[in-house]
Amino acid sequence: MDIVDGILKKDKRSIAKAITLIESEPEKAFDILKEIYRFTGKALVLGVTGPPGAGKSTLICQLAKRLREKNKTVGILAVDPTSPFTGGAILGDRIRMQELTKDEGVYIRSMGTRGRLGGLAQACFDAVKILDAAGMDYIIVETVGVGQSEVDIISLADIVVLVLVPGMGDEVQVIKAGIMEIGDIFVVNKADLDGADRLVSQIKMNLELSHAKNSFVPPILKTIAHTAFGIEDLELAINQVYNILMGTNMLYGRRKDHLKQELQELVYEIYIDKIKNRFSAELEVFSEKILNRETDPYSAAHIILSRMEGEYSNDRKN
Image (cartoon, rainbow, N blue to C red; front, side, top):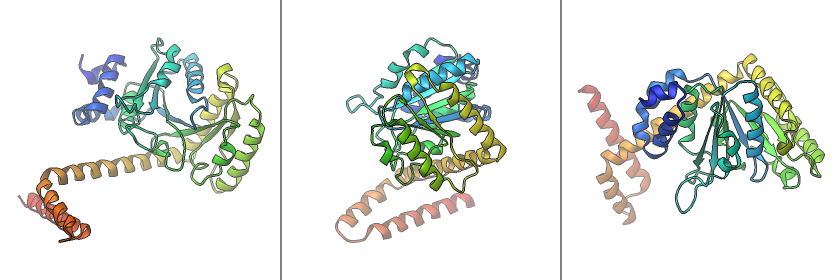
């Protein structure tokens, strides 16, 4: 079966092959991505992020079960830390979601961070497109953690669920600049632990300050994932936020921003590859000159760029 046809027919083996290509040989995957792109844009992409130990995987597992009860198909991309020995994902999340693997309406894939600080593997963005084209109603992306630089998820997800737990210093963490802006929905998981109500109050107080100008205030929910307490409320909150984003045209704006950023990064990558391929000799020569203080990096960079622009002008004339 052709991989593209297999993806469109929801064949799990074809989906797996395509994502493996994206991770290992991205250039070979470009043709697949080009063909399936017109079939994307229908899935709701949920980002689930939060500190290690917050119970994200259990929460996602329970949410996926809830969505399956309503006959919705679910794709899950669990971004694991990359193993320093094999370079592959450690697969902890996939082990925790084992009970979902037999469900034909659920596809689970672990992906390594490949050392990225943002918490998302580079291939994760394209893997979402594969699952979208395969007709998944919901695509849930779980990221490694949350921090000042770990906010890649907002460049991918339609809705971001920020999961926090009491007693892990989250009362301080949530007030850090940039963190409050990530979440569209705040979940205080393990709400049976001491300090849950205090954490909810802290989040509310900070939301009043940081979301004063927004069109809606993100809901705050309490859950106990391992008992499924609060999962129904989470599903309702996701639907409510989605309706707000659709009704205010914010979802369109977000998706446009995501695509603009993706396009910029693609152009940048292609541009850098061309410089490396066409000007490898010049890079070597200039590196030595810079080392010997015969020139400086700034002048060298401008010379290389001007030469590349000259080649581009000649190509257009021809």
